[in-house]
Structure formats: structure tokens, C-alpha cells
Length: 400
Image (spheres, rainbow, N blue to C red):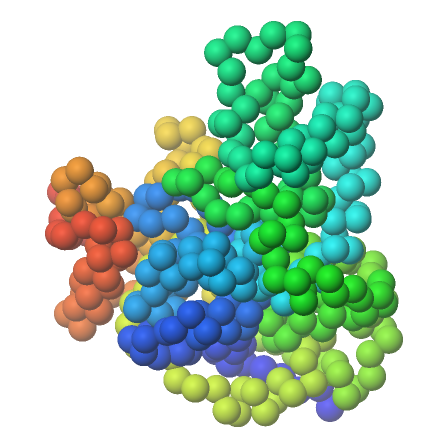
């Protein structure tokens, strides 16, 4: 008989697997932060700093003692994390580096075709020359390649050099040793990844098994497509074949209820999903603002099915066509997404300005909820490095 998991249980499980049930005020040491990121799998990196950058907001949503310097230390000094690609640029535990070697091989072929069509076959010589430059001169930033007048003696224009650096990074010859502001500092990979992880190798079969199993462990349940998209390491076909090979001791089938009358779906799940659900720790009752790139909400179709929450980032939508705003943050309360908020940290004015709040249908701004929201805005102001929270005129108009 197939186990049926209620919608609320499914949401609670996802939040737990993504680190949302930890006590948010307990201080994390570097080892604890590294364990949290390993539990989550990765943390997406993004340059937009509306309150704080995505990677910092994601971690802060789980633990309010987190500070950006903690992540910097783990990458640049301790080298327990490295930066590369999942579905986008992300911070990843260095222990996972052997599996990324397989991604690097795939990306050499995939990106090589793109670069050849863009720059011609000569891109290989440019990349090799750039790699030699880093070997001889040490780490560099793309802006170190800028010239007031790039003459014919130079092998590349600035944009060619930047492209070469990105190709070498995406395919594993270079790493991101750190960032200057948000600009990448490139260096040889062996200088940025601990030797025990850099030198380790896994077979193709081990790679596929790890990529699929570790994805399902963090998803809790999902389809072959969900498993493939989690890391962007294996194809859907590879994930489907992996599922077909698993026995009942590794993977089981469960029914997952959708939100508010949405259909129940049968999916693959971790074999221990029943015991996991029975032992789920409680969720903090506080309101939490989520980065648009938070892994809990990244898969918009899964989000809409499980939370009945229609969300997209509108930074690329013309202003007159936006429904919500340029950069709007979902609000999580317990296991419910209760609304979204348009807010921005203005460091010059030392204020977190709240432009607009929208609550979901059937969600009211009770005194208790307003108190929890106000407490979260104070926390967001602290993260953004500003002192005051200012509600702008009209901010409390609610969406119905």
C-alpha cells in the first residue's frame, strides 16, 4: 500500500531538509555553517544587493547569527567550500569536488561548442594562454585584463579574456579564490580546493549514484526531472534509469497531496521518509523573508503545487508590466507562505524602506502577525547594515 503524505507534512519535510527547522538564534561556528550548507547541498550566489546578496539572505533565513564574513572565511581561508555551477553559480562543499570533475568534463564539450561558434576554434589557444598567465602571474580578476588601448600584440580584447576565464572556471581548470566586492578572483583550482578532495576520483557509476541519491535525500521526494534539476549534474534519462535500478530499501513510492485541492501525485521518495516525517522537529513560528533564490522556492512549479504560491522575479519584466515589483521577497511563517514584501536597504539613509506588503488570500494582518513581521524587518535591517525600518506611504495595502 502506497503511503500518502499530507500537503502540510510535505511542506514541513522540505523545510526541514533545507535547514529551516534549526533554532535560528543558536550561534553557528564555522563547522556548523559548513554542515548546514552540506545539508542543503549548495547555496546560490547572486550579485543583487536589495537587502543583502542572495547567498547571505539564504543562510540568514536559517540562522540569525550568520554574518557574510563567516561564508567568506569558509571559502577563502578554510577552503571548505568552493564556488562553481549547479543550475547557477553556487557555493558548494569542497567534499563534493570529485563529483564536479564529471560535470567539468561534460561542460568542456558543451561550452566548447558554444565558444567555437562564438569565437572560432582559436578560443582553445586563448584559454590555454590565459591558463598559462595564471600559472605564471598568480590569481587575477577580469578587470586586471583591461587596457586603455589594446593593440595587435595582445592575444585578446578584454571580453575575450573574460570569456577565457569563465570557460576555465566552468570547466574546472580555475577556481574562484575569493571576491573583490562581487568581482571574481580566479586562481588555479588546486590552490582553492583541499588536496584530499582535489586529488580524489570517483567512477562514472559512483558519480551518477551519488548525484541522484544525494538529490533525493535533500528533496525528500520527487520525479526523475526533480532529481536531475537539483544539482544539474545528470540528465533526466540518467535519473530515470537510476530510479529504475533502485530496490525498496533505497527508494519507495509515495503519494504527495498538493495544496488546496491540487492533485495528489505519486513520486519516488527516500526509503526512510515515513520515519523522517514522524520525527520532524517543530518549525520556528517567526516570519522569515526569503531570497528569490532560496532553494525552498527555486522550483516555481513545485512551489505552486505544494504551497499554492505563484511567484516569479520581475527584474527583467518592463516596469509597466510588473504585477508585484522589481525585487520582491516571499514571506514564510511556519510552513506557510503568507505573502510577499517589497523592501530595500538604503545604506546612505541607514534605513530599510518597505514599499509594499501583499498578504495571500485568507491571511490577515493580526496584531500577533504584525509583531512577528516587525521583528523580521528589524532582523533584515541588521543584515542589510542599516538602523531603521521605514514603512513608506501605502505600504500596508494588501493583495486580495
